[in-house]
Length: 173
Image (cartoon, rainbow, N blue to C red; front, side):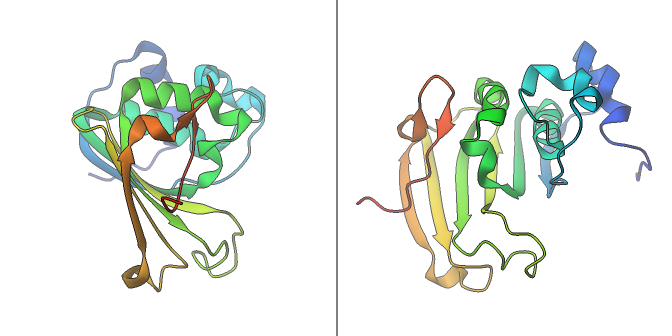
């Protein structure tokens, strides 16, 4: 079924009441990366502090839309991992589940053909906390996955400070 509606506006009441008609096993998204006015984010203030961005609201809403063992896979900016404005989102996310895979791209412009200059990551977030291990991989761009680095660590080793900053070590050194 295709629903032609504003995803965020059509889910505001569901967010407020925490009642969703449909939950999903898997959500894959490349959310919009766009700052919005704080007045446009009033419904989402529990996961927004400072300058709101659409992709942080998409993250939180999609986590709510996962069933108890669901997975959210995203292609997004890395900024939510450590940015001050994303601390409420990180705390919310980590209260709901954990990341089990993170892939980091070293080249900031190769993902979107030089149209977006962002540190970009692919994440896999699981609502259930079945494993405490996160696998971190990295590659220069989308064209060299065969040369990626690999690192597996306990997830708590990636968390720093009360703001739940997510560190992304790319080697054991």
